[in-house]
Image (cartoon, rainbow, N blue to C red; front, side, top):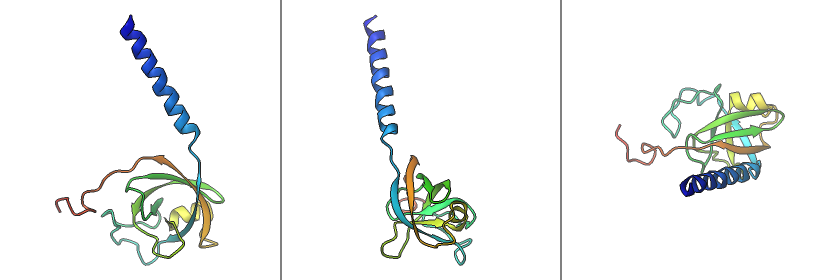
Length: 132
C-alpha cells in the first residue's frame, strides 16, 4: 500500500511539474530573415542538403533538430538544421518556404515570435567526432 501511494505521489508531482513547464512556455521575439535562392541543394551545417521549400531554420545556438513554432502573420513549425544567420542583429534565418508561409518574405527581415516545441539532438558529425 505504501509503495502504491509513493508511486501515485511521484506521478502527481511529475504531472504537475510538466503542466507548470508547459504553462510557462512563452514565445520569444527574434529578429529573423530568410534565405533560399543560391543555397538550394548545398549542405547545411547539420550535413543535410538544403531545401528552400522545407520548413527549416538556421540558428547560431539551438541544437540541430530543435523544433520551433514561429509566427509572423501566420505560424509554422520549423526544424533547426543549419547555422546562421551571419548578419549582425539577426537571430534566426528561416528557409524560403517557412518564411513565405508566415508572410515574412515580403518584408525580408522582421521580428517573429518563436517557441520551442520539440527537442534537438547532438550531431557528432558537426563537432568532428563522427565517422564519415
